[in-house]
Length: 257
Image (cartoon, rainbow, N blue to C red; front, side, top):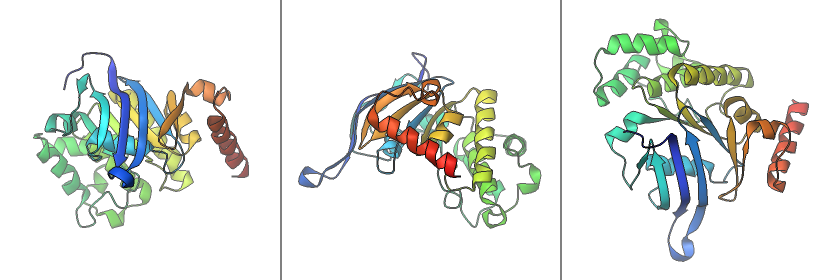
């Protein structure tokens, strides 16, 4: 998958819906944004705002959509091929559900390599476990032998082992203890710098997005209501009332924590 511009991801006039006729529900309405190569962009909003649905549309998991989706300069159709999944990988919200309980870490990582035709699995597995801060000692453990943070590190390793250029991050720390969240966010930040990765991150937590991203889109009821730099977000320079409301609520939560 080769790029014709400097955009890792470009979304234009994206609508996503579920159901037909009178049962139709519009989950995303006329969404538009772009993420530069090597950049980190956040989609923020309350539950049901449509942010995760955008990720599903990109990965082909939301079959009913219209508009334009470009990844690495290539416009996507309704299906995703092997080339797409070699370039784009996703880290899900729940590290407990995303790993098979009867498969070792080694099996999980070996399977990803096999599906994408990589050789030298031993070397690659050892390296990626080191890269995510686990090491070889975890290679033959099962998910039930790992903490939540360790499981999410395995999920990140599985995404990275096939050397993608884009990671889609769907609330990657929301199921973790607060003390572990910062560790995973710092790991993701370091990995992006080391591997020149492009991140599109979904979160309901403005503090998390502020740590990870340089630009955010705020979503409400399926629409992007505002796009702003994180620097402006931190300075409370939002222009839309809904964004200001989210910022004030985030500050209040941090004061109460």
